[in-house]
Length: 330
Image 1 (cartoon, rainbow, N blue to C red):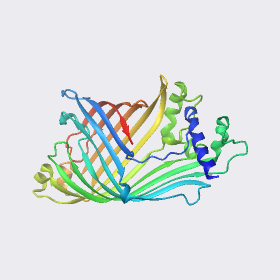
Image 2: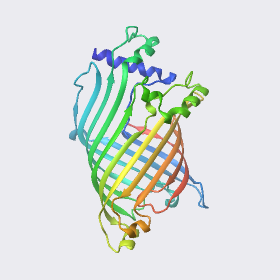
Image 3: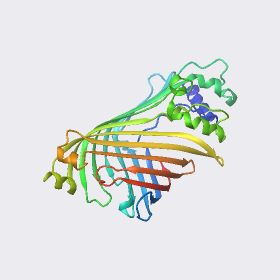
Image 4: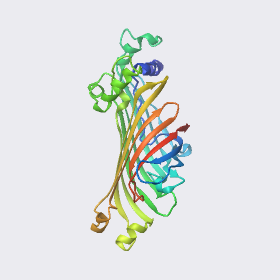
């Protein structure tokens, strides 16, 4: 039965071209290594464009990790791990003045991860060996959820390392994929515009809901210890540790079909807020930071992004277009 259940998930993935996918909860920070060479073009001001790259690393250290198999493989696919992860991400531009996210964060997560896909009863007319019965088999796919919780310690800096800080605390991330035929999936307003574009461009034969179009969330609470931060020191007259909360949301959904390639819409939003800041820090606008990015990505790897805002250690709010090619490694 367990083998048949895994085959069910494989067959359900075959309906991707029809706009329905089996639950596949993804982390906020993608697993593995991603490198993205980019060209930056400021949307305002007189600064010329320039080259650079973005990166994202999320690796579990095998010698320090342990896995737990499913308890009930006949009705759920589940894994849970306890381990130590190396996590890093950032953006680097040859001209730092046009970098919209000049914030490099590198550290270790002492983490617990749990990912689960629940299934229902297989319909009588579902044949796990016949792709023509995938629609009937989809009734057995219910929902998926992934939760990551971690104690974290990291180093933060701008790309020139003129500003640096240590941060440590805790974080929790959650990703949820509803059942394809559930009310949560049917009435998800974030996916409504793309149901039409998918149908018009031939991705779907008719407007359909997309289970993987649900946002992913990350919430972190950290103690930040600045090593070098000239702006804060000038305002306060001293170095001083502070507490900071960080909220992140990310969304990815197939939006259209273009020359046999899938065009995905991606949105991310990051917010940082210092807790109980001094009035001088508030007056200098150093207590909170917002950053958002909207992207269109081809499954071949090309991605066009409009980024706006600023991140900690970046004192200037930017509006920049980015054209990059995303390379994913295991």
